Image (cartoon, rainbow, N blue to C red; front, side, top):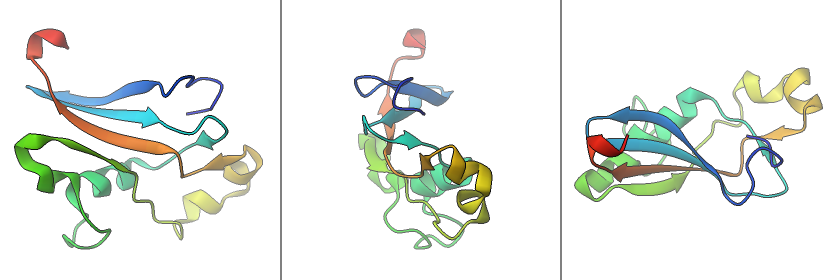
Length: 105
């Protein structure tokens, strides 16, 4: 999500399922953010080892919730020449889980 393409804290749908909607929200006006789907998944479910990345959104159960992406900074994808030259950062994305009517999707 580039800062230019995500003005005013824009949101994107990551995944809808039944009455649950997972959104990504760009929260930094001066950063071009890019994260791996693996890190988004770990933010939602806590990783393969439940405490692998810290608290998980799934622990909120029916209440939904939001959290900044817990990213693995040592992942080689964040350290490629292409990623760095583009000026990307894994910071600045909030993941939200909300309850919505399937008719609204």
